Image (cartoon, rainbow, N blue to C red):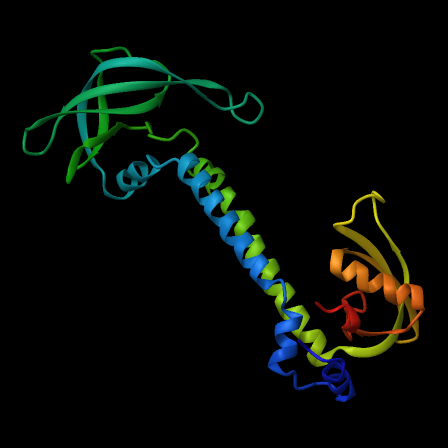
Amino acid sequence: MVATQDWHALLRQAPPRSVPETLRAVALNGARRWQVSLVGIGIFCTVIVALLFPWPIIYDIRLDFGGIAGRGVVLSSVYAKRTYGDDIVVRKQLVFSVRIRFSDAQAREHEATSLVLGYVKPGTAVDIEYLPSSPTVARLIGGFFVPGGLWEVLWGLAFLAPPLFGVWNYRRWRRSRLALLTNGISVEGHIDNVWRAPPEDDTSGRIAVSYRAGGVPCQHSMPVGREIYRRASALFDSQRPVHVLHAPDAPREYVVVELMP
């Protein structure tokens, strides 16, 4: 438990202040909730990416860099129940699954299946490319394994954005909280109002805080939990001033010392 005199001792220091570990721990209270939430979001988004990521794109990439040209014959061409394009930017076309037979450089026969835009008549001789290390990975020239190519990859990876943004936001929050204790400007403030919306909700509430930053009046409201709301209500009822630390270059970033967890 941090005593009031510990905060007063900190505020008496001129910036940059030396912040004791006990006060750092108080300022970063809630970090564990951040971390648990980020882990949960990360796991959820990783599962989504694993399900949506177009893994066959790996075959396209390997063929792009290591494919060998050859000749083959079409065995079958079946509508893959997929389309490519949107008729706005790219004309919509049907995607067909085409099975081919070909011989490699050692005259060994192989069969492989890939996708292509449009129907290819069985029996047609076609140019292909295949992997010499894995000949069953082959496609027609102009064919593919993933319609849309790298755009599909970007769509699959888009679900990694929420946890990455969460990590960035957590680091920003942590850095901001510690910077306020170290370099924040100490001013007197007041709790102007406390309220709940809806009024019957006793798990949280909102408070309005006012102070002057560089001679300019500032007033901000923020949501708070039950315990902080209870303490803010007591300060509001008694009309006692509070100690506010605001960032020198961003007065909207602040903490109320008396309401620190």
